[in-house]
Amino acid sequence: MKTVNLRCNIPMKKKISEKRITIRDVAKAAGVSIATVSRVINGQNDKVFPTETRKHVWTVAHQMGYEPNQQARRLRSGIRSSRTKTNLIMRIFNRGGEEVLGKRALADNVQTFDWAANQYGFFTTNYHYYHEEGFRCPLLLDDLIDGVVIGVPHKDIVRIVSEKVPTVLLDVGSGGIGTDLPRVNSATAEGLMEILSLAKELGHHSLAIVGGPPVANDNFLRNYFQMIRNCADELGYVLSPQYTFQAENINDGNHDEMMHEIALLLEPEIRNGSVSLIAGEDMVYSASLYKELISMGIKIPEDVSLISVNSIGFEDEISGKITSVAHNWIQLCKSAIEVLKDTIDGKILCSEFLVAPRINRGTTLDKVKLHNKKEKIK
Image (cartoon, rainbow, N blue to C red):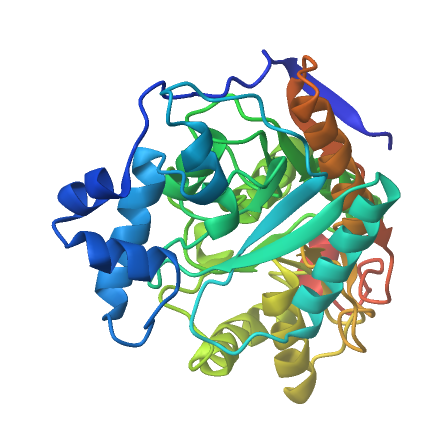
């Protein structure tokens, strides 16, 4: 599959305020003293102020378009002077929680992006956003960033950033954006059609889907659960409601327990032949389900086949075995930087760029076996 460009788009417009926003304006809008704003923005006495105060000050500063330091001096006349490109771009990640950073997949992703950016002559800086801490970004306020690539943060952050610098969204859904910002995504649906078509040729036609909580319409997350359903429907799979499992309120603490409960529900359906193929919304669910079913004496792929989406793209011992549609993160990062470069240069872009995924054949997809009596009868 080749990279596909969809839907024509207009150049991204940068909203510029002609009025200089001062630290006094920020203090008044935030309802705090000028000294508090100054110390929070400059990182002085950071532990003196509660997290809520720091978050509030930063949010107001970004929303108002406050620009301190050199840029503020340039704006004394009330007019922005033309800026000089720095070749510095930023990647904003959604940390998603208070957990300690250092996960292998995230580290690999950061290094991949930095390497790809370097190939195009860019310097990079990474920002790990966590909504409860607020959005703190002095480099953006100081107007030192040429452009930003954002992956799944909150929509308010997208708005704040995109009104200030050229912005590209990477690996995000269309829900909640409400803008014409360019997006670079994996062509996961094409990969799913390829794997599900192969499974159909191997004799599978009954399917169970396992995933996490439903994705809200205004969420940036890509809805792989619904993507699997759509592909299965198009190919004529039997997909009964009782075989669609979306684990509500799942988290790191109860993940294993909830996957165990789903495996217990699937075990008799697999043994009586009602389910011959299981699709995981993502590898975090598929890998856990694989371990649970194996521990129950279910043979994969002899008793049931297993496929998955692998949005992280990283493969360990278990995920490497699972037949999956995996994000090609090297090409995704390169494409995002190419699109960002064109956006910075003011070129006309399409609204979405799709990058062909990697298909990992693994060992978990095979033809329906004769001992699966219910499938044989059908």
